[in-house]
Image (cartoon, rainbow, N blue to C red):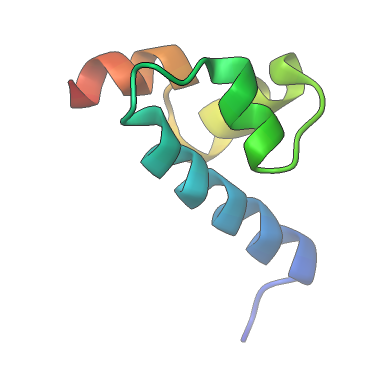
Length: 63
């Protein structure tokens, strides 16, 4: 496949997070927990590294 399991898992989690962020009733820390991150700040850092946006910026962009 050409990517590590860790990279695959991270990409999968971020894609699921993008779906969950479409619902404004769900808080960002709840999205982080739902996709397997216990630390919201670390989740935001990883999310920005992958997408170029923080979760908040991403949510504002898609609404």
